[in-house]
Amino acid sequence: MKKTIAIILLSILTFLNLYSPNVFASSTSSSNGQSIVDIQQGQTQENYNSIMGEGTVQTYGDETTGVAEVNTKPSFLEGITSLLGQVAAMLPGFANNILSLIVYGNTKEVFTIQKLLTNEYGLFDINFFRMLDDDVKFHEEMNTIKEQVAIWYYTLRNIAAIGIVIVAIYIGIRMAISTVADKKAKYKKMLIFWLESIALLFLLQYFIIILINVSEIITNFMINAIGNIGGKGIEESLIESSTKTISEAQGTANTIVSTILYFMIVYYELKFFFMYLFRVLRIAFYMVISPLVCLIYPIDRIGDGRAQAFKNWLREYMMEIFLQPIHLGLYIVFLFSAGEIIKSVPLLGVVFLAALGNGEKIVRRLLNIKPKFAKGISEQKLPKI
Image 1 (cartoon, one colour):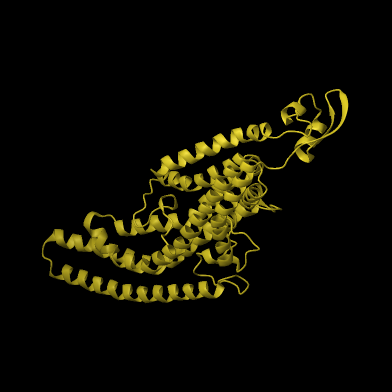
Image 2 (cartoon, rainbow, N blue to C red; image 1 turned 90 degrees about the vertical axis):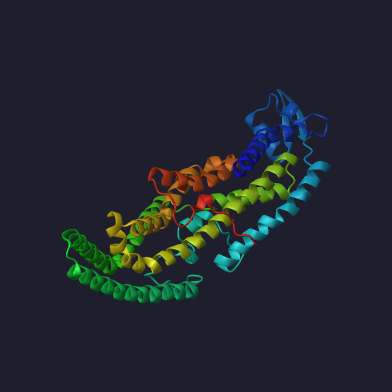
């Protein structure tokens, strides 16, 4: 059902985007009764630009006819459509302002997925081994969360260490009382797994730090590759052009297209905001429970020789960590690299935003990674209010 609705919306947008220029041209006329299409015929490039830009033309064909002014006053239908579009656009505008207030504390700056992926918002910082500076918004709240994560991590690690000692005592007793050779071999193997769990327990935090640092290095490399973007980002440009078209009544079809585009852009911004916020919480949870995963490692391994709990934890944790570089890479390829094309055909911008979540799904399939504990961003739903 969800895919059907998306296909229908994209089909409507494509149709309106293709035919809206013709609708606009056929409904506009000059002061002497000539349509724009008639005036355009036989014109030079300079006159054509003058017609479309200023609404005037100096010559018609090869003859000088004075200045022909084009009537650009919106029709009644265009005015009504613009009014309805402005009313409808209040909802995504309000949502976008809320996001800006959360991450900036004001509505002067605009929240975008690009800024989220390039680490401009401290709210989504997943490096729990580094405190945020005072000039970063939410630094106090995030530093408090990081301190709590560290406290619970060390608490559970101490509990896990006690548990591992108890497991060692249990293994020693069973080895001592076992008279069957097969049983003794089994517990000797379990003792090896116990030693591996000890190593994991005390080395896992360094492995976690390495994973986070590798993710940050890849992300920073792509940010540096982008360089100084200059001007507004793609999403800001799309939002600005959409709201301008809606407010200025630039054709009925154009207004409808711009309103739908505005809704869809803000929808994906809301989706990524909540999903990356939940990502921070999931990573914090994975870090806190990691000592318990080490505790059950020898018990889990003795069954079939596979540490399923540890593998599931590691797979999910690595996917969450490297999710940002994956999305940033897709954003650069689809949106940043095709920025000028998207400005000319805004519909592609929404299509590429939708492709970000699907890109994550494709990567999971290629690596044969199926989410065990949490759904991917492309499968998440916005929280109900």
